[in-house]
Length: 89
Length: 62
Length: 274
Image (cartoon, rainbow over all chains, first blue to last red; front, side):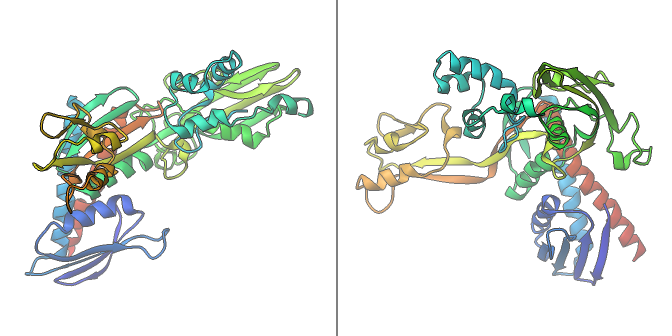
């Protein structure tokens, strides 16, 4: 996956995801928001052919990049678990 | 020619057209024929129901 | 998260996805429809066509024919080691040569790769009259449903929230809701209305039962209430035959997992650089 960091501060990250759409971004944002230390997680793309920009802000000193990474790890874990159950049945 | 797939859901419906036509001509109930052929959704059913075959009229003109 | 199948065939599956968020369920659905790759005819070289259909209509019809796909054997042309020129690992070639009068069927397409055949052999392509002839070479390639619907691996693919029907103690088993229910989910029990065996998943949450209950003059709250469970989803996935449903599901999860994994890798690189 290709990303472009637009803005990065201690409590804020603005990252563009090249070539992604609602399919992945919506699940990612939802997963990031489960973290109680995350204040805002939102994505938007100006037009439907432009790359979505993810905005994450945190409170309590957590790094926003860590919050995104943890969410991605959680999604990946969910998928591997589900692949296993499908292959067994 | 009958469209290959249903416009709405994408199910391949053209395979059933020949049998459908034959059975309609034999005077069977259209609803039963369609259910029999596995056309469950109304989007697929209208594909056969509303089709008018004109290929034989066009063929002389290439 | 958990998946339990209530039906799993080659080309249709019904299952419930438990402990998932609506966002994840929707991502799964969108991935199955739009991002699981299949083979479909993309380029057609027409050597001869004097049928009643124009070349472009003929190629469009050929494109819509589903082709059995082995995802381990083919890669996308843009990602192929041949650099997009076209080779045996990114293209499946078919030849067709028919002379009229007859009906040209999808079975007349002769595949170069015996594994990549058309799903059905009797899809009518064009009807030929006397002295009419079609000779062509078609190249199928791998791509996904977000590019064109001909590459979409699923037909009906969707989900609904699991219905939760609660019947209060003040139900007097008048049966108005049983009559009103268009899907016959309810039945009259001994003391109150009950859910008919195995019918719960048929409920469409139309809430006609709640209205009927109110209309029977039970008070200002209906004795029956229908609510969606936002953590359980009933999925229906139908395949067009190019891939078995099980493969569609596993490769959809694989695609989501790959995206998440590569995001983790990229983020690790970034935080290392700071």
